[in-house]
Length: 401
Image (cartoon, rainbow, N blue to C red):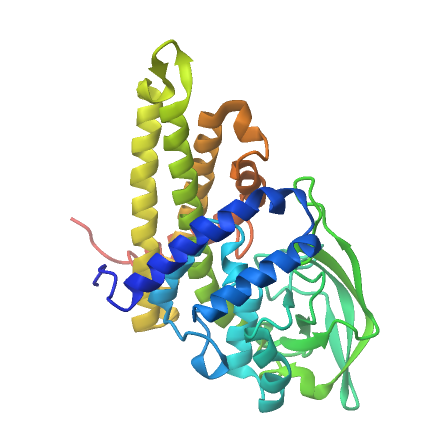
């Protein structure tokens, strides 16, 4: 595996780093105070500039207006953009649209691609992904209560979803619902495209997360589907293949998340080191002179480097050998990087003292928004159990000396 950044990617990463530093980080104080809707005009202007720079939609297919970067290349991009909570959105690489684009590209019909994929890649509309349910275990996507019953040439959807990220203002949702209850366990659910203006699609609320409801793209909604009727041609992929499609979506998505988290770690680490160098604790003495702070800095540097190399290795293995061969590496990075993220942000906040608890820096935002990293896309404990079982199977009947 070659860790060298290619000649192609070097100027791309440098341009993105500079744009984040000069154009996006200065917007963050307003982003923390204003609603997403209020920020939209400024963000759209930044998006216009990104398009002019030909850096729009880095991981999406060129035939739909993207840059067509592969998984390894986008991992590096995601690290650069992750330094700001606005990075992925402004460059057209944000979740949940990124995952929806991938599965529309793989499974969408020509009509679905024309209606939903093209405008989604272009940034003309937004989407959401509606899978998680209130009373069902989010880490087990084969357990769903939401149903989609076929009646004539329509599906009738009934159920309750929550943590449907970015539903506020979305043009459509991709919904996972049970269509084949009598089929084998992993072939019961399907994915369906539901336009947000369909009768029966009810956005109940934006959920308050750590005291913040959010708005627009930066929100998580509760959705109630009540006799929500959609045409049969809104089925995405084969009927009963919802679980298979979900796995196609979640594998690369975990790489994207983990490299974004590395970007957050880099930002928090830089803020921590800068604060330690400047914070006076007694006449002529700075916080950076304390051995405990030096120990934290050394540990965080090692942790970030280890996490970054693990993610790049997982991305390389997925890209070259496929998702199935990289399952163990994907689970390892999901819980390992999420915990490193929490550790680095927490220590950066601690070094900032009272200042870290305020929105005068980005750290409090990272602290409250990214705690969920250890929950979504599979909780830490589930990934650990899964990895341990696979490892233990390798030792069944094996003599070790």
